[in-house]
Length: 252
Image (cartoon, rainbow, N blue to C red; front, side, top):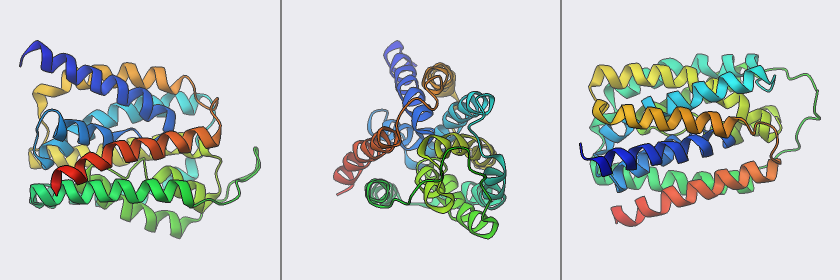
């Protein structure tokens, strides 16, 4: 691997680590888009490499957010009951069976649709300090759907979960983002196992990606709870459009 590629991978992960920790979504969708568009990896390899990188961002963010008391643990644990097993099995059996052009088009359209969801779908937030009662069936069922997106496409564990938790549980944006880092850590671990079994990750890229991801995750999570809900959701929607539009254009 040449020096330019190594530096590019580090800078990609550093940027995504900062951004992903701030919004709570991990930024896996940006890693996948970057690896496909800039480093020309095929879909399954990009997803397999991305889930390992994103796991580092999520774990770093979850540790910081948990120490600050922003994570709703019962909500996260009911969610991952559905997401973890599904993420593992879809990573093993589905990710490398999606045709390349179809893969890029599906992810691109999904990201653009999610940007609209983030902007348009809102519910009144619970007041700060309110007790959150987990909606167990809804969380577990939603987690199963997110497991498919996370395991097969490398997206969803974060970017869908942030607005979804805001809608299902009426969590303020920063608490939804914080709780999502724990969801992403556990679901991401299952997805990493699945992709490792399938042989998808590009391991030679990971030292540079993981170094950037951990450093970026620490920088981004240090701003936990400081940004307004509007800012967090705006950053999330903007990232979705930036990642999704080039994939759609390239696949057409």
